[in-house]
Amino acid sequence: LLLLVLLPVSALASSDVPELVMNARDGVVRIIITRNDGVAYSLGTGFVVGQEDEYYVVTNHHVIEDTLDEDRLGIRVYDDTAEYVDAEILLDAPERDLCILKLSRTIPDAVVLPLQTETFDSGVAGYALGYPGAADTLSGDWENYEESDDIVATKSSMTITDGIVSALRESISVANYSRNGMVVQTNTAIKGGNRPGPHRHKAG
Image (cartoon, rainbow, N blue to C red; front, top):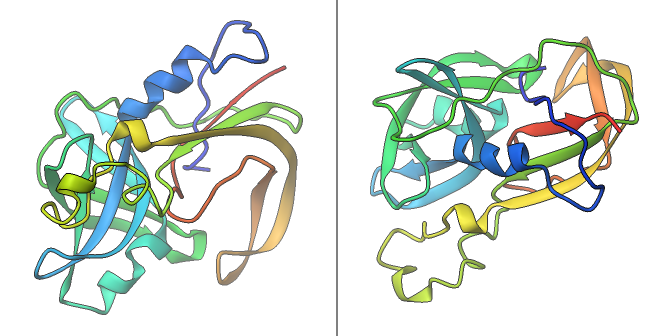
């Protein structure tokens, strides 16, 4: 599961957000689908993967789906500033609702997040990071709201929610496609716009 990012942590008080979760924010980016005139059309969240200077961004297929049929739409990746990096689709797996974007250039100081390779079980605590759909209107930066194509939210607007992995289940459908696959059921709140930010889970 490419969207499941697991990071080892030491024992922490249950009321604390682990430091590694906070640090993972530097690997979370916003995906803005824009029209040719630069106006935002739709948005989502992604996270940086890769190695050395080869940066890629994992997001959902449904985030970029409209760009496949609309030449007037482009893909921009925003970090913590009003600047953006153009991106193109490198790999697309609609049947798994996954997409990997290739960036036109690197993002300065971006943190490459590791992908989960080990198995885990239900009952582990989890954290989800991302930008909700109302991140810009809730940012409070009203002075610059219209001047920057309505994209004003920074990392301080990123949400962090927690919960547990309720179950790992076999499913006969993934996204809108009929296929067998393993899905993760969790009560970690994931609102529209902050998918598919990284999910981080820890035992205990």
